[in-house]
Image (tube, rainbow, N blue to C red; front, side, top):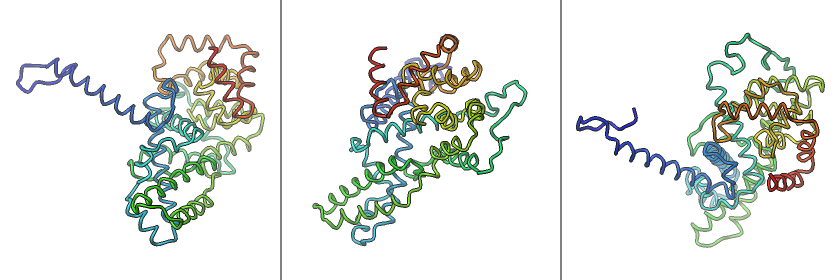
Length: 360
């Protein structure tokens, strides 16, 4: 049905239907603006609505977690009382007014995390894995030996990511150490500011109490239990001659983080650079990466389909044809040029990518 039911029994009111569509469009635009306001300087071409919304939710949930960690470690009762007056999830709300506190590296990390969550969540919602539709059961990662328990630990860590918590609930902040430090000190600054506003002035006692609590909480953070670290450890433990096979299995099962870890070890680049290439942040990155890893046409097609929502479109026949043709036409020299661009020091790789974008 294209209209809205008219209570006067005169049928479908087209005018109301158009108004309803306009209201929905305005609501979507407002939601997008709210999400984008948190992600400072985010180029719209790299941030679909879904990515913005999920990154915002992940940042908010992890902020809730680190705020709680700081609060529990404050040892001065007067300062603890001031922080408790702020209520639950204060930092998540406060960051909306101070988004400049979020570092660029933190935002980029959460963009990658949001992309991984969206792809994995979509894969889990399917009743049958995409590689099994109408096909005989093939090899699966679940069949692989896991003597070190790394695959099981990674599975559990990724499942935690997929849980859609209430906005004020904490999300496990299983982040790399530098990203965790960025986030927890951001929360600390917001809490100091809030205490100052309550009292009307800032005291050294407040700053030292919150600073000491933040240091204690940060010292207990173990990045080794996070999904990024686990994926990297599994890739390091895998036999070199098994990496490509395992990477292909991971790709077929839409285990993008595990694929990235294995590809990073195989190609000698960083895991984050592999994910950026997979998301096509690097011009020609997706095609070059799949070519470098020797991914077959069918697996490449399914990868395109899995990532299409992150690109802001559906993988239609024209897009599929163009992508497969580009993959088949990719030369070894073209692949090496892209890999060379992303293999260097991250600051250099970032600037080379910016230069490449400017000329394409």
